[in-house]
Length: 370
Image (cartoon, rainbow, N blue to C red; front, side, top):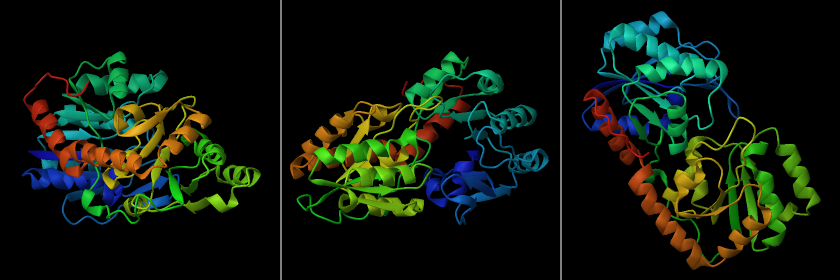
């Protein structure tokens, strides 16, 4: 197959593993990406060098705004006509302008369209109107979770659906565990944006009742000042470390130092957790997971972690207490590694993507994973 992939996610080289694996499986991949992306935590990012895939870069309008950014129409059309792909994989949220562009060009050029959707809350207003033609024109829809598939169905999508991670993990980038399971103090690691929906404050509130643990807070965001004030108010200066934001490629090394990854996400108006890619990395790294039942998290973690309610401080303290024993953490680590190997590695995601694209071209109508 000749596969054209439209997606701003791939401005980061570490996110392209599944595409490289797909090409190594005998397919040709053309990546169509913005040249620049204004990312919340890292500011203005430039497309990172790529040596394996064919790439066309574009100066996009309103880059950084997922639903409102757009590719320059004429250059994108020329790139697709020159490549003559068998299928266009549009990894840009239905309901946004870029997905609508992909639909229009796919129809004009006679290219089968396979969009990707993360949205797991009901679409409304202009987003719903923009998504309808994309759903109608899809040969198959890829979604990041069963919840996203259900949202698409309720919004009118009649195409077959595949549930698949958008981005995989490379287990070769995960170092061996850097400390024994019985070493103290235990490190509960939070990796994510420091805003209310990600729930780092719940981890801090749980620490006083989990005396064996210290917290490592990795990330930046508007809530950092409030979190530092909370740390001071709780008298936790000697048990909390704020690391700041780190590049994607450093995440595996940090997780190899963690005794648990804590993801206490909470639903907020207009948002609930869509996947949590760091969960897949944690499983690959053998870091036990404690996470809230927010959005798609239970679907991702399954029985490879301890799940608590949203905003459940006592539940988080109790879960950390259960993980004081090295054997409890070791069991979750082993289960997580096996789950990551089967579902979340770049190779596993590439295999499933290949299957889905073949089904799209053959007009197979079976849903996968719903």
